[in-house]
Length: 360
Ligand code: NAD
Image (cartoon, rainbow, N blue to C red):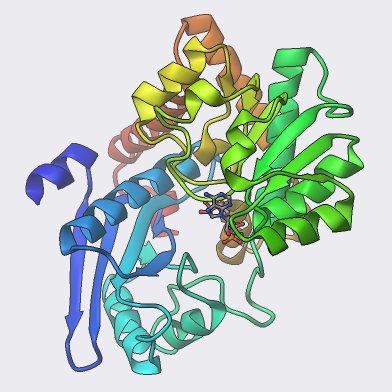
């Protein structure tokens, strides 16, 4: 276990056990240099405890990089509750979990993720203030419109570099997934004049979206073979892998899904070798995190929109650094994240005792 922690560079991992209410959870705090570790709680029935640990370690590390590149004063964390989200949820399970979060005194702040809902966050809120994504006037609401806006402006940045114009008018875009992010994204794309093809494993869902916007449908397995300018993964992770990358017929990959590359280094390289520009997933999909952060930072809607739109400039910078240094775009974004964290660590050490973002 410690080898794995050292490999990913985690600060702390907390195992939460409360058999009386059926709670088994893992909270992973990856890095709090920039601020409290923020990241959602996933509820999932894992094949093994080891799988749950690996998942939470990878996800929490991803949050550190996402927040760092988005310029947020947040660290990276994530949590998993081991169990079936359809049958094992109770008020007391989430309240007990809330007590564990409270015991960390703000080092970790949670939010919704796969398998958890606003109601679950409200149960957690009964025991701790360190939770975002609750309903009502204090909540920031559904993050997916902001994620989709970030993906849209990110695609424009990729188009600017590749085609010399940021307009997506007439560009062919293959969208995998017809869920929350994809729905809002397709709205932006159609308004900009793009020719969109959509798929989803739930055909009805995809067809309803196609009907709403007058776009084309394709079967889920065929999406990788669609001749297009931009392939946009907005479903699950690991869709860019040994089997799919050789099939892609696009010049850009830009989408909202997390962990798109099955193997970060190897598959980013395969894309580059095929001449496909990859917009790093955690950079282009940071809009939702920016929106959740507004609950902590008390930003106005206008401030949130401005910050989400700045994903355009961030990606242009990443593409430039990658091209100037002959490195992969994912390497360029990792470098930006690591440098920002290292510099923050430096100033914290240099001015010990001065007020910092950590003890505001
Ligand atoms: P969602 O559950 O609403 O939509 C995902 C859709 O993908 C579902 O309709 C599902 O049926 C479909 N799908 C799953 N496997 C598929 C496959 N193999 N082929 C085609 N369709 C498939 O989720 P969402 O909120 O839209 O999020 C989409 C992705 O973006 C996820 O990877 C999520 O982690 C990531 N993400 C979302 C947000 C957000 O604000 N919601 C923020 C950051 C990242």
